[in-house]
Image 1 (cartoon, rainbow, N blue to C red):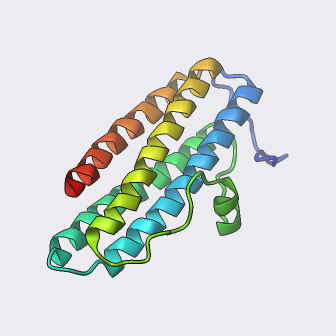
Image 2 (tube, rainbow, N blue to C red; image 1 turned 90 degrees about the vertical axis):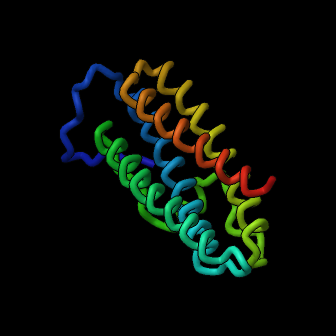
Length: 164
């Protein structure tokens, strides 16, 4: 998939075009993961039931609000590298490392268990992106991804704490 338009001015930022393309491809896959995860968190927010409804409803809202910011940041990072961010549901489902919602219940523990696994998957994916960025000499993306990973490690910890 070519993500550079013929009319687009290529960035001259000290990175090889091939490396920028590889990093942008990784970021588009992360964008797909984020979009699928965002949808799953919204599902949990809308459908959670039980005595902890109110606190969990707000908890999920905080997570998807932050993920919405992350989605925009990843898409903008793709653009900084001179490529286009994917924006179709078909591409998201093709690129994602995650599955669509598997848990069909409405209790918070079941929903949180699936989201915890998804965040841990995303963390491992980001680690591979950090390695890719390092090998490409793209310290900007490396730093960006490290910040995202640290943020998601905290979210995964908070999710796991609900399961104890």
